[in-house]
Amino acid sequence: MKQPGFFDVEERLARLSGLGDQLEAFSRTVDFEVFRPDLELALGSVRS
Image 1 (tube, rainbow, N blue to C red):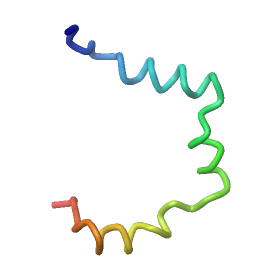
Image 2: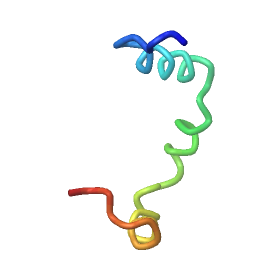
Image 3: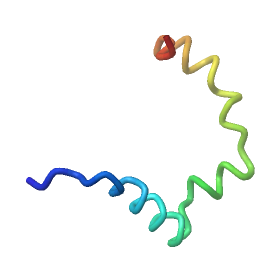
Image 4: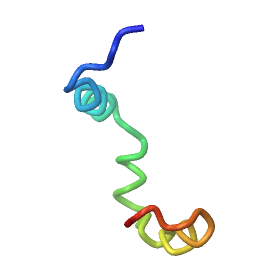
């Protein structure tokens, strides 16, 4: 299996963005930070 390159993630995200990434469209209308307290409570805080 090929090891991912340094810029592979950035290139993949740029390609998704160019194709019309639905998460980008949702993030323009939905404030996902509203869900952070509930998610941190349910999953535990991942910040140190």
